[in-house]
Length: 94
Image (cartoon, rainbow, N blue to C red):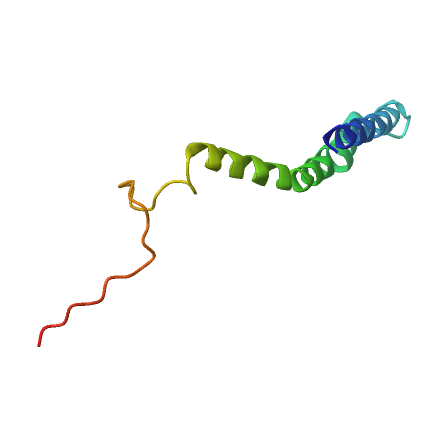
């Protein structure tokens, strides 16, 4: 899955780079236009897509590292005690 995603990303950057080069070398084109083409059609959309597609892998890695630390993560109070899940009743004066 990761290798396929990487191949598609490389191919997309190649296509956008060729379009940017063609725009820069065109008599009506400009280097600034080529730069915007590369960034707006290549880098920006590709970074968003790769970030979204890599989210499940990041979550799995986070769960694995939490499990390797020996628990569900950092305790809220930092004292290292196991949470009881109960709230102590409020003591009321008679």
